[in-house]
Image 1 (tube, rainbow, N blue to C red):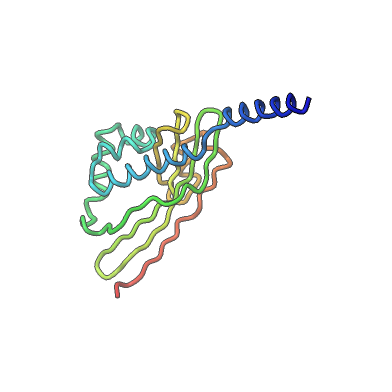
Image 2: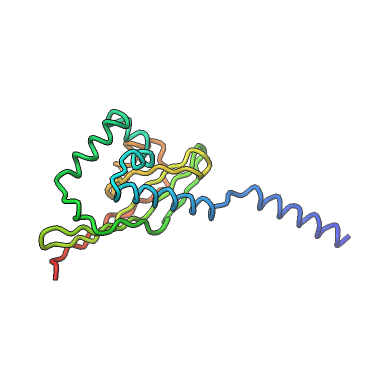
Length: 171
């Protein structure tokens, strides 16, 4: 009788574990996609960068070609050497919704211009529509309202921390 109970419990636990989403794998996918986006940004591979941008933003700006033109224009005033570092750090939040996965991902940028250095820590919102395999991102500039404009079904559980900027003189 004890063996039957143990076997039944084991089967139940295993089937429950299999039914759960593998958040470790999902977080790994988030990091891979976000790192690819950051690399595309740093190497000015705008086609790849666009692929990792939330589709609603790309469409709002007129599609892929218009988005690329817009991105280039936004960065035209900045010297190529101004961005010293762009790294993806932690997945700080992961939320499953009925239609997708949503995440908040920390990013860190170091800008250097003239006599100033800016260390900026901000947060991307990530969206996956395929069970957590592929991800696209948007930078809401620390504002949940900005994210909701582009992702109307953003989970109320998503909390976007404020951007932290540290501006200093070069030493």
